[in-house]
Image (cartoon, rainbow, N blue to C red; front, side):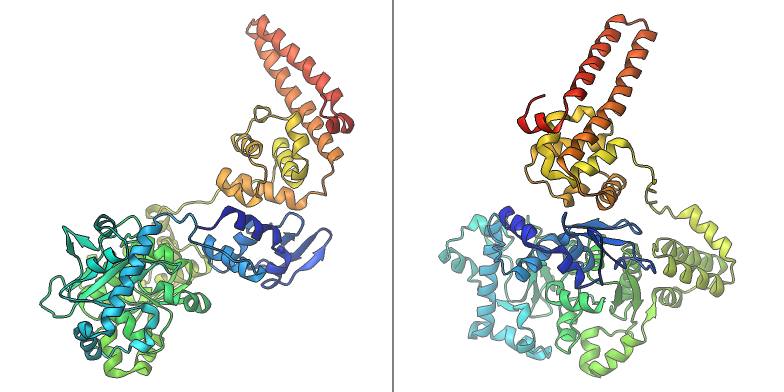
Length: 561
């Protein structure tokens, strides 16, 4: 969506020390800057920024990358938003539509949105206007949602044809089905992605007898109902700044609360919360306040959502509304202050779960305890995990050790690979190559991918041979996490690299590692009686020794070997 040239321009002009210095107090330490890591709690600074290479790395939590990665991690931005944030700081204009996949579908939806919004303001949309009045909706406070009305008589197809869009394109966008417009006599809720583009629509029948009461666009190349969230585009900045999201069930619940000042709010698209939606919310919020309907279905939906949000490492609190009440009816009857007080007294997931799940027998209580233990076992934050573990032990009068044993036996949590401090010679050489990337023209004269044994190093070297401008931030796409951490640490620790130093490192690597490798292969060949192979390895050893004698700064400059 963003031109590669613009991305490279932003990378070139960005001062990583200036960007990170806005969030972290940095102190110059030799060639690097050092400060307390913003990604984990520490008393002694282990977070370093290298302005020459444009990278940061924490020796404590192992996070690292460039300025884009930092903004994505710290501000919970996606890649396009991070680029746009940096570009804005630099005064660089970004066109996000050039090369946009499915550009025509976005254009179709935008024009359809304009048609529905226009209808809502005219006589043809009077039924929609009256319905909104009955629901106490104030359009002047909901302009960002671009509500509309689909007339019972239709008219969208004619309008879109006048704009140059074919029936086939309308079908692809999910706006018509079997030559009939999907939305008729419905209030229209445009659904936005995080970039503010319209990906689909929701429609509410004006009369209650219209079935289904709520109708969403079918899935299209740009719309997957289980992936997005209604209102997240409008609320994401408030959610991010507060670190908290209020989660409601439907369109009108969200709009009603939003217009009363609750602007860190989102809702699933007419279905139960999905794993993808929970992960999406975790990018913006550390805490979720579930505010579902007070009936049985609302309670069940809240119970389902708890596990998904905990898996996404989001703290969960639940506000239980009075029976047969929903957020829309409650705030209109009781007011914003009453809702705020209710939300302020929300129970954490443990108390909510324990309070609503009825246990009349020992077997039911055991099932409840095991459900809660499974949820607790998925918490990765050690403080939160310890808190709930001890609380569960206290509430149910069960030893912590017994609960811990149940967790260890039942809950399989992915274990992070532990990085060893040992770094191999070829890893050390690759860190130096990346640090002195300006001398890669010299490096490729004396090294080839087959000179390396480790798959990750070999794969990375092949990538370097193909690209003129390699960005260290691309490491995570090529090598595993452990190797990436070793290379970043090596770059951050390393001294400035000269051409002579690079050549010395290559000579050392080839003289020690490769020579030893060939001698081993030669001995194995002679041991199995393969004289021809042994002689061949001997020739390779002699050629290697001649090459080592020939590597020096002068012939590197002239291109001779």
